[in-house]
Length: 210
Image (cartoon, rainbow, N blue to C red; front, top):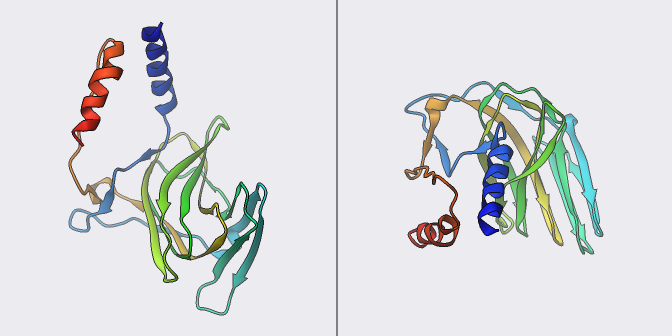
């Protein structure tokens, strides 16, 4: 019975991953091999507020600086989240993109992508956990691969606890494949036949060698 469950799990993973966004593993841009493409700068008029759950999220915009600062002050948190999110971008050209923005926070937050494919199916993909900046401005950045079947893309930094989050200078840039490199090498391993021991013995051995 466990064998057939494993087979169905493998089939489900293959179907789920087809034409879905691929996250680059610890990527960095390599200026020696290529330059970034034309940047899409996300300006303040494209941003909206999002909030759900049991909490009190106060949204505000500080326009006193050279670039607008969008702020969330979360209080009385029980569950849910709050975020500033930009109006979804339609039909991006397939390829690598780098999302980056400056942030200041006193709690851990999360970088998330909302991906809608050309059939209208929506996925929320966790890109990274963003540590507290301890009151100073830091950069949150992630490189992703967007497939051809995208319809709408939006990326946002989410706060899920009592605390303060400020963001500014948000950008989305296209990057040629030649500009992508990784901090370490990696390989892809495929097991045939789907035996139960692949999961019970082989996988634990792989994990133990990290």
